[in-house]
Image (cartoon, rainbow, N blue to C red; front, top):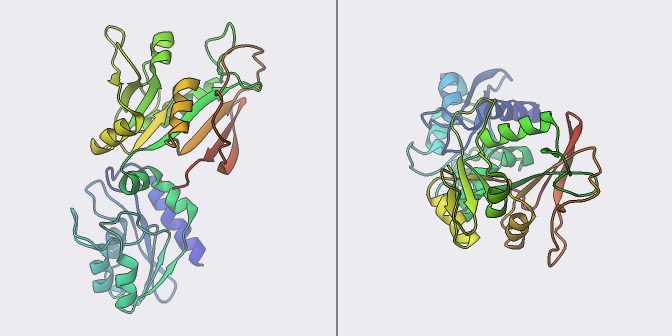
Length: 315
């Protein structure tokens, strides 16, 4: 039953992803000693954490209950009081945690709960970690989580002679959805000069448009809406993180992608594979100094294409 209640907490967080920015999205479920769900919640736009919302819904019924929460309850005073204090005040007997909090300022909730006599089980769910992969990288490494997105033919080309597009319409719509969920989108100056891309999210629901960046040496074309970032990549990413950019969608060509990969700055790969053999044109990627192992490889049908996703660095 633990898995089912934690899954419900994950679903609650998934349904409101991005609502709590810049805070992480956390889902929580309170289950009474008799097995009844008496409270549910996810982090609100105001920043009130998911476990606080669920405990408030449960009220006195939380005493002796089990709290299922997708991430370790925080143990520090931020914009809200420590969630651990609320858990202890509610009289919760047991807490099931989907993953630990990587924020060094907020971690320690598990230890505080155990010290107070609350039973704590840590599941270390990959799904729980992945829900906040951008935030986790931002707070632990001080840079955005970088996803490299690329469309490619079956013979490894990133362009098809005589065609504007490599991937199909469904894949292109998915890219706009990815942009809508990203804090920033970036290309290299080669792509800027060749395509003058807009990089905005179009035709999909977008709470806010991403920042649109060009890495490399300028100048930008007259009237370009892109921001030029000409410094060393790691320095630029740290500067972006300091400005609140937690997630970066990299849409550049082979040169920029190779530079990010060589610097160890790509965390996730999204490869849209089209059912086409181009026969000529630029290849997916140039040579790297060493092989790059990937993990969590998944394949998904998107229209006529296949989307391959994998992690270079797991959250």
